[in-house]
Image (tube, one colour):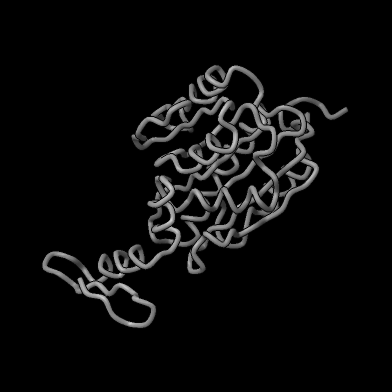
Length: 230
């Protein structure tokens, strides 16, 4: 490893057993101010600052008492909620193992498991004020397929949010470039007072991720529950 360039930028030499791609990734990590800041401030990942920045813009964490964190690993978003609202009930779920976080209930299971929504709701112990989803499907390298798989997760999270949110609650989910598709946006607009897209500064410029922010939960439309519309 060597240092060079302007501003003390860290440059990493390609070492034995390290590919050029992994070398570029390591160099990017070492020079990322959000990575350094996360380490200094005790957050598990730079992703924590995405939620911090979204909260600064949309006031997501104001007065929340119950929060669901879908795709919690490694835990940065729940850490933020915990620091801002230390008395809030926080429940997270992920396929990946997640180290314990004081004051947070963590379930290691597939969100798409038939039992997951029931277990999450039971652990929360009441209606949620905020449902966060930083879930993304494992990519296969085919842009259209990756988009469809991730949007499938977002749609599932949106329907789940419709079942567990308290009136006035909010839903935040990661989507890919182009944002949520037309049908999902239309559903969210029926469920929430406002629906917006945002790309927080902490989200890398070369990343395709955006976030959809839906606030002011009004209720799940009757037709989505298989009930006749009034």
